[in-house]
View (cartoon, rainbow, N blue to C red):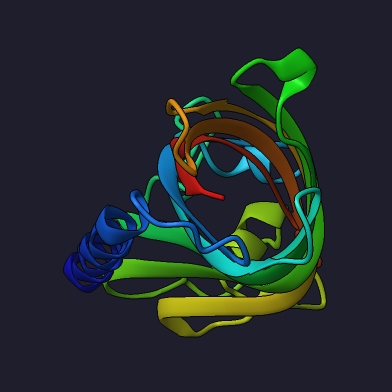
Length: 221
């Protein structure tokens, strides 16, 4: 967890360093965004994970004033869902979602000449759902196989969980996303405040990863 936090802080500081000189200049082809917010897991992910925070950082190329290609990195927490019965014998776990995606954005820069804008965005890429335990844990033999064992990274054979020790588990897959956002331009600069909601669906093994992050942040161009 400490390593992940250091990475996020480094990304944030680098983003601020990029935005400061850009605010007074006109790089019409360059696009940059950075923000954070809240992620709500949707079914079937919502049966295993609860609401958490997220961080998003992206950069790309403006084809013209309406169309752009954006590459994005996203981190989102996936804490255990306290409203669903969990295997109480497991030690405490930490679960996170990481993604690298390429996206297309179509925007309406100024609605009716106002500082308010609207954009639609969608794309796809790589997603990893990563779960780690505070210590190694081996399930007892002949443990019945139920869906949440898949979530924690265990395998099943013949209706029973495979007897093995799991300390951490990463599940990588492709995925897609789509969403809508709103912007407010700062005076006559190329900086904007944005808020957006995106739907992410990753084709994770056995249990798909489905989340909807709501993000607030700063965007250049």
